[in-house]
Amino acid sequence: MKASIDFPRQGDKQNSAFFEEWLGRLLEDRDRQGLTENIGRIDSLMITVEPGHSAAYVGELCLMTPYDYLVTLETEQHSTHILRIDMHAPDVLVREVKDPNLHGIFRSLNEVYPIGAQRPNSRYMGEIFQVKNLHAVVETQKAREIRFFNQEQIRQMELPGNMAIVKPSPYTHNIVGYWERPDNHIRVYSLGVSSIRDDMQVAFEQAKALREKLGLDRLLLPIDHLATRVYSQNREAAILEYLTLSSYYYWGSYDIPDQNSSTNVTKNVHFANELHSPAKVFTAANHPYFCNHLIGKPSPTEAFVRNFGPRLHHLAVAVKDGHTGDQINIDYVVSALRNCGQQFLLEVVGSEQEGLKQIFSSASEHSSLIVEYVQRFGGFQGFFTKENVADLTAAAGADEILRGLDAAARA
Ligand SMILES: [Fe+2]
Image (cartoon, rainbow, N blue to C red):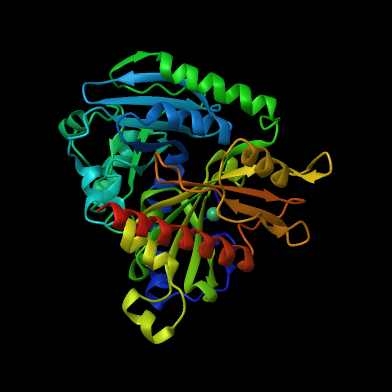
């Protein structure tokens, strides 16, 4: 197996001497301990939504992405809906809290942030890795001071009993979990009582029928990347922590000076194709908020984190390369969804010549997450052009200002 440090480096952002030293040390140790080999793909993603929102959100995801609704796992305080493409792409678990007054750790992560608190149950929770030997991963990680929820806490939170789950990251507030699944086994979650819920099935069938009618089924591909926003000073720690927890390597970082920001990419060492295990992207401002008055430039990334807390900002769905009629596929997808009432924060940015085109949807009113669409042309390997990222970041920032004003008006 190739050493995790040996992947070619992309990007132009300079890291600190601390980062470069510990990147090498941590990856070398991870390889030597057998963790890189033991930890495989991202096997599922977990998202929580407000009470009463899951049918609408399942419908939204089943229209805007290639996911299908499979089954619901009912426990006392939560309904957990499983969405699936196949065993090559991660499942999405949409978890609805039944009682709006229920307080738990994931809600607490939203409540101290002014806009995050407006939808206290809406957030991306984290991802679960498929591992070969769960016991070995957990014991090795515990010896590296990684903290896990115990079995009683997992039972109380009503998370699947066949997972080991790391406590939320102090840098990203996301969790990482592990579970053992041989490649030839399907995913089975040890949680509650399973049933196919009529309301979910109706929402799914309506969305899927529309997805097929619009021709989106043959254009939408699995999740390409997951983009988390963190405080400026936590950029390097968040990346290094994620590499400690996963089998990902550091792909590189790009500076986006116009938006006082950088985009930092990590990818799975085992899968060159992101569609089999999404890339994890970390976005952070170049300066903390209290420097802004001396810089005089917008700082939408830091503003987002101050308003919502560190968290996942968007999940990006890949669009198949090619044309539909006389339109580039991504342009076709966006106009078809716009005709159904889906809003987007800007026009599609980028071009075939530059290698990729991208766009952000409006944030979901159910999960607060944005869906990005990304189409790469002719095998382009990158995640963005600098101009695209600047435009996307600015558009998302403008939307958050409006939502912040809206939240303030309602407070
Ligand atoms: Fe993105």
